[in-house]
Image 1: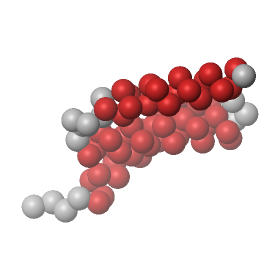
Image 2: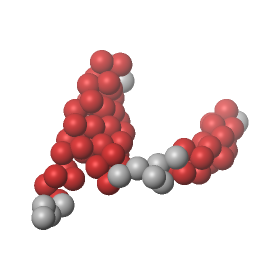
Image 3: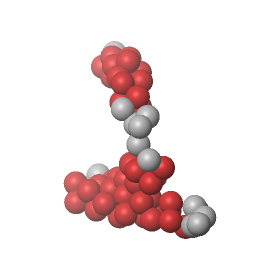
Image 4: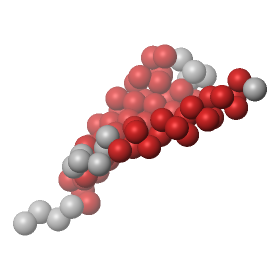
Length: 75
């Protein structure tokens, strides 16, 4: 039952969290996505270590931020 409540709360809060990203630039969205993916990857690779999670999020954010420079054409 505990997980059911957590899922319901997550579903109710998700639109609010995602709505806050509507005015971000592409670079900022890429950095946020990279940080989220990196945090999950860091947690998985280090067995849930806080240092691994934060390190993965930091590295993922930097990579996500840099992706925009690679994909966008400069005028």
